[in-house]
Image (cartoon, rainbow, N blue to C red):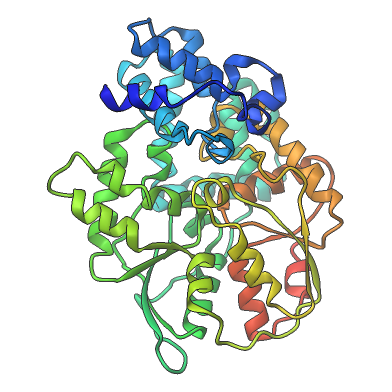
Length: 420
């Protein structure tokens, strides 16, 4: 493939990516670094076999894109890893058990109703105070990780299809509700809609919207990702701006132009939607504040989600929004460029490595001494919360939208601290 060869040739093997790569930081193995994986990709492109070892090293990559940020040559490693994973998925060089686990994950997580159904059995055994962890660990580490990461049931929130702006209308925006966000953290979506409305936006919440395809896209399931992308494009056809409150979803939607570039029927619409997509913090920073912020006496640690910081380049905006709240103090987390280990479904498929990275991130978060962790991606929230709990720490986690919502509505810090 001409594109693949060109992208490979951009790498000059300088090694600037090494200290920012989570798996290289963990193990110090060249083949588990971006440079090493690019070497393996080059061998494949030159006709080498797709070996089990190559698949293993590619699977171990989180796709966090820290290397893209660090690279002085502008290597599109994100595109390289996606294309390589497409080839692996097409060739299916995995065991039957591995394939079944992947099919299970992708048959559930992109579908909110199925996610909701999955939580029923978990809710039942937790009420009985049963610990299925050891049994699930023996059956499948992936199933055990799924059980650990699933949060307690949250009260469902049904958003209307239109939330009217408060005061003079400044904008009309569409809002993605997501899959994991919708089912595991419905309060984040409710807070997002309220903040947008209080800042003068009519918020359109298309009823028929589904998964954005991020999990599929980042796992090499190209045709599945394209189908999800087309459905989202159709659902948001009538809005000028789409606001997204989950980093992975926003990253994927901003990439639709590339995902559907070879589809003559959808390419133009896909590129247009990518150009209209904004992360919540990005959009609010562009819009400028109007609603009054009330004091919120909290010390928060802000976590840079990889698909927000590395993929979208959205770092300053969330900090600026939080910094505009009277009484709120922000503390930085050490090594922010190193992924927490969530990375879409990575913490399900590579639970051991993900746990090591989660523990590392949890220690750095705890070291800030903050009252609260702020994160802008549901996967990060699940991953870091689980790691903190594993270390015997209870630190509440909130989304940027929830902090802004509390400040604008004058809700005290107790609403967050009671989450411990």
